[in-house]
Length: 104
Image 1: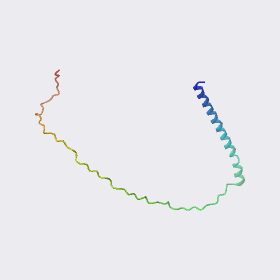
Image 2: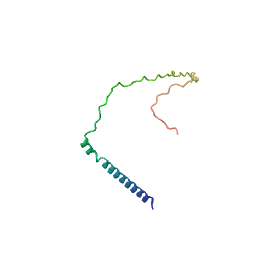
Image 3: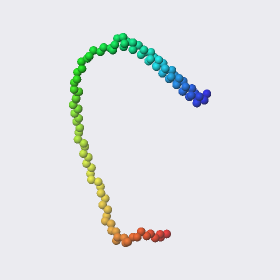
Image 4: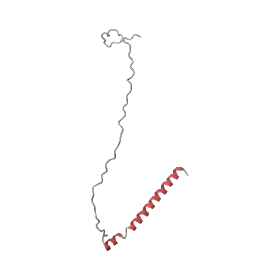
């Protein structure tokens, strides 16, 4: 048999088993509730004696005490700085009109 046929047969078997189980549960549930109406008409509603109800405020507990150390303070040495020697530049450039002359 091909794997496709085997998969199809497996699906059909599962579906059939699920339907049979569902109908069985439905049948049992229907039969189980058949006597309730007759009992209710004959004996009336079931008697439940009134109980005592006590209302108390909710209980509040104090939160637990949390001991925490202060945050650590980290101190680093100042960073190393490199001082470049003074540089001397030429005069400022002249007027530029964004006109480029290719030299190659």
